Image (tube, rainbow, N blue to C red; front, side):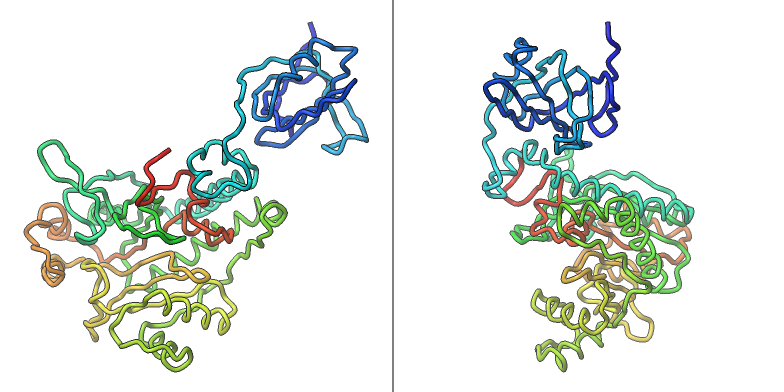
Length: 434
C-alpha cells in the first residue's frame, strides 16, 4: 500500500500526497476533469482522466463548490498548469461534506453576507484581514512583554458603570444588577494598586449606543494598557506610539506584500515620535486654518475631527497624531486634572488617519480627589466606594494608561470600508447573530 503524506497544499512535496481541502470549482469535459482544491495555504489542481479512473470521475461529477474532500494521489510537475506548475493525479477521493449552493456571492450586500459569515470568510482576502490582526496583536503583545508587562484577564461584568450611566448594558446577575464593562478601567487600575506596575488586558468591551456608522459596534475587542510611575500623560503617549510602531512593523514584515497584492493597500510603518498638539492648539487650528467655529472647552464633533485630521495630515505628512489636554468636563472622572489649569486634564486622544482610535490619560490616584471628581459627574461616590475608590486608600503610585480598539485599528490600517468587515463577528444595535 502506497504511503501517502498528509500535507497542506502549500507544503505538499512531489510524490504521494494526501490533501484535505475545499473544492473551489469543477470543470468537466468529455474526457477530462479539472478540479481546483483550496485550503488556507493555497490552491492546487487535480486532473482526472475519465477513461483511466472512471470511479473517481464519477465522484467528482456530482460535486460542487464548497464540498469538502480528501484527495490521495501523486503530485507531479506539469508546466502547463497555472497553479504552481503542479497537479495531483488522484488515486482516490473521499467526500467528507457535501455543500448546498451558497446563498451569498460577491454581489451580496454586507448585511446579507453577515447572515452567512462563516461562508463569507472563506475568501482569502477576508481571511487575510484576521491574519493581519493576529500579527498586529502579536507585535503589540511582544512589545509589552519585552518591557516587563504582566497580562491579566478580567471579568466582563461589573457592579458599577466604568464610564457613566449612558451607553452601558445592564444585566440581571442573580438577585443583583450588574453591567457589561465599557472598558476594563477599574480592573487594570486595581492591578496598579496591587503593585503589578505594568499591565495589559485584551478583552471584549461593550457600548450600548445605537450608532449606525462605519466605525461603531456594540461589542468590540479592546487592548488596554496601564503603567505605574508616570509623571504625565506624555509617558503614556510615548509608550503607545512605540507599541503601535512595533505592531505595525510586524504586520509589514509578515504580510506587507500580501496585503498589497490582495487588498491594494500599502502598510506604512509610522515614524517616531508621532506629532502632538494640545487641545488649545487644536481650537486655534480649527478656527484660524479651517474656518470652523468652536468654543474653548467644547469637545470635537465629527466635522471638527475630519477638518483637524485633514489639516494635520497635510501639515505633518504623518498618519498618526495626538491631541492632548482635553477639557476636564468632557473626560471621565478618573482623569487627572492639570494642577495649573483644572479646567483641562492630563489626557489625550490618538488619531489614525481620520478616526480616533485611543483615549488615554494620567489617572487620578488620590482617593479624596477622586471621590470629589466622581461627585462632579453627578455620581454618588458611596456607590463606588468599595468597588473602586477603596483601591486608592491604601497607597497607590501615580499611573496612566489607554484603551485601544483592535477592530477599529484593523479597519483603518487596511482601508476597510466598514468595521463590520474588520470584525470576525459583528455586533451592532440590530445584530445579535450569527
